[in-house]
Amino acid sequence: MRRSLHLCVSVLAFGGLLQGQSGSQPMETCKPQMVAPAHTSPQSEAGVSYKGYKRSPVLAFEVDEAGVVRNARIERRSGSKAADDLALRWIQSLQYKPRPGCGTLSSKASVTIDFTAP
Image (cartoon, rainbow, N blue to C red; front, side):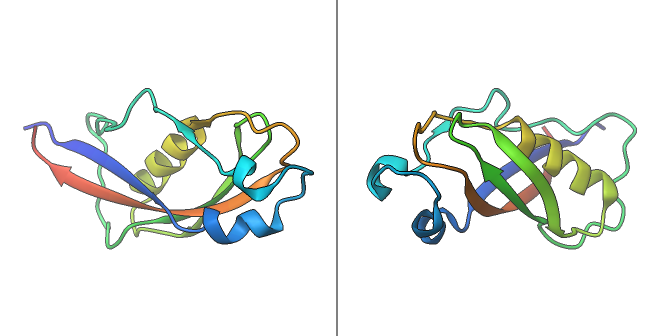
């Protein structure tokens, strides 16, 4: 039986980090807006084991003025290297609307992984 792996990202820290943004635009103009991701529910890879999974991983990343996710890294591991790697690849694939003059924003996201059969 093939299992699907669904990822749901909760952005934890954009609101507070807008104050620390380095650009010249007003904070309201600089609020990040995510472009709909190509894959909202990535499928688990055939033959990959998620053994050891204990909790949602927490990832830290930056969004530059062009809306590109940069410097994504895992801050809290899930207990499964495969789940952590999948969450990291998914975060890196996200795209935000450009925010010229707003600088780079730092954020954290908890990635909730739901292991369910399709």
